[in-house]
Image 1 (cartoon, helix red, strand yellow):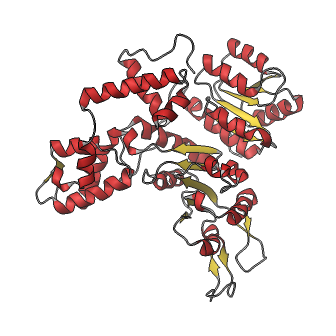
Image 2 (tube, one colour):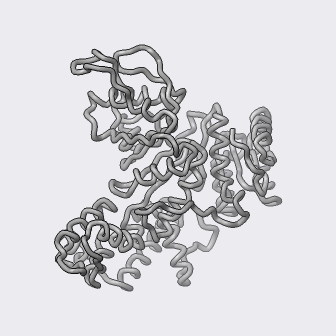
Length: 453
């Protein structure tokens, strides 16, 4: 396992089972971490009052106050302390819900020690870099343009996750750049020298998908005139991205679960087991928990894939990126150096971009073809962009005032619970956090009389 550098503060382990506490203390101590332990949530809260900790690892089920209730009380006093929940399979839904109250992540029993150390390293990475300083992401390659704090945070998270080889679920609307982030994670990882294999589960007919993933033997089915190597074999020693994972049929989900568990699989038409050392990343534009409820996605596979989630915000939540991205794309497609007129810039920024970065790229390809001079005008943009931007109800400061009032109203309605507020506003929790920081800096009162959630 990776040799760890001691955290600047100890890790607090909270569990009523002395055997479990001893196991975690021994394992983390052997990895170079200092630990302290508490036998109950009440004891943990007292210790948190007395000392500073880098991370809290807490069991969910304990006598007295539960791990989830301990988390909620910790969040009132120490909103930035990373908290990792340890849970039995039956309690996983509660643990997932607790992540909306501020848990860093959860890990299921029996504890996978590789998964545990990867999550601990992820939680303490920034502290080990420099106490009090955020980790700086590596330089972005050409073509990846961002000026927004939201995307800078995404890339910073990706750079922290990359060395760990832990499983990652990348979520976000179609066109936001999930594949781009997945490839960055691969390129920043120790597997960068290996293959990066992409499979779009939605683009391959269901009857061919198993062969695409696992390969087939000659004669396995009509048309199988020769042996075929599958994508998991191709990705051996590297990374495989399973895009639109929600489209994977249930029968294949069971086989994927086995590959993730021990790396074993068989080609179609063969019973001979094969093995692959492929790092699995998954991406989806749909709500997998809703798919589980509908019976379309295996719950155990979801928990296997979603060790760490990276959510990529839509383009409408990061307007700082629109003009830089548009400028980059127009430069790629234009035969000459082009710029945007003031009116065209206004339309670009005000439009909601439901197709996200992919739609913006296509719009700039069109504008490059239609603009004859060096200036992109509104008539060179797609009609839907101009119409959509014109339909906005307010401009400038008036629009900002409407947004501010909507945020404050939603906060009050949801008792200042930021997760529920973000849901009602249809934005990510991270986007809400940045908007609240901006309002607070402008002197707008955004906090309740008591502690915020």
